Length: 230
Image (cartoon, rainbow, N blue to C red):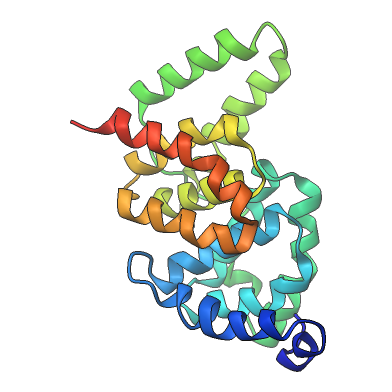
């Protein structure tokens, strides 16, 4: 990450707004905790493969209470939702920080932990939709969506379902993957993410993924809010 002096030599306004508006104001807004803001930021950086910023924000995430095993699991999760190359690009940066902080491999998630229980009714409905929509086009995609994502990845215990959803929705918005937002945002709110937290996530992502990506997600988020209203 460029130093403040580096930024000053290129854009004094950017240096000033980074300190006063982004770190001094956005990060202090109350509707997302610093830990949640770190999760959103890490997800955005990995999904966009913005490696220059990762060392600073990975350290900040750990300082804000994210556990090493949770950061490890976020990187693994995003291999599926942002692609293997994006996850792999984060590995050497996280490795250096883990070495620096003397984080041992036995503090990281197991390869095959005991999985959380699955919710059978919701899973049957999801599987039926995927089979109907995707099965005629790509049976292999249907197979791995069930076996690897929803019967494995989403049930791993070292990242809470609510936080896993926060990672997923943040990454989708940051990458402009609007078609997937509605399903995963509903899942996120079922997993405990509140409307005010979703609203603040959008505000935060405007700074880390750009206004167009945040604005493009607004109609989808609005429709989900309205669809969940009593």
